[in-house]
Image: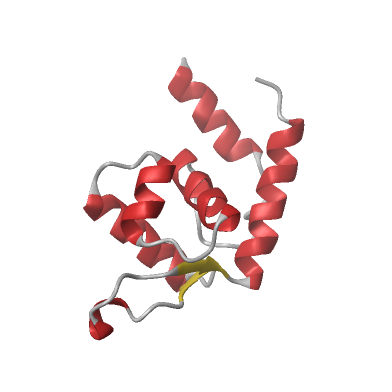
Length: 107
């Protein structure tokens, strides 16, 4: 039943119309976390979004980055430092749409 609700919410929300991204709970949670506080590392985003698998968070962050929704402003692996994630303009727009839709969604 819970899975059906999540699927229903995923497909009934249209904030990502035109983007090749599925708005799963984890995707929306990661965008919310980064939107609430820029400059977080992979592990900080994972912890706040409730994702325990480092491989999953790395793949999700990379996919959101390729879509132009987030960007890494830190030195990252090349500079020997942690990543520092922030929403792009496009990411901020999507985050606002997600927030708006979730405000009006019925449980």
